Length: 179
Image (cartoon, rainbow, N blue to C red; front, side, top):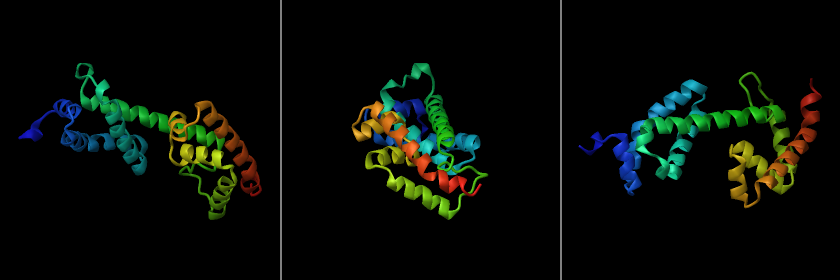
């Protein structure tokens, strides 16, 4: 009858090292989180990614969860919502910088245009390429990129800025010559 535990009991067990308790939390709350995110975004992959990121974040912030401040469910929904908003905001920012990198439902790029973007990214200096790929393709925040690349956040920002300028310049002809 251990499956009759509440999510709060499961999280307390997980805090004490019970890995099965984490699996039970995941099992109990995955679908609810996914449905909320999918209804919000209508994007299956994005919703699954955010759910995964939410449970990853729970593992990192486990000891800051306090049952006195609310249920595990509301805590996870709060994490998921924040992650979603951050991701959507980054996407908007990307779209304003480099609209050709962010596909929208009403924009279809030709194979030639996609190849032009890939070629332009390949021409970037290696250090800038790493920042662009981690930022755009892996949708990581600048703090994480700084940690991954072992560089200060200011360096991430300058490499990203320089990479965007380079890509805008490289791709100007590919995307404006046809218009």
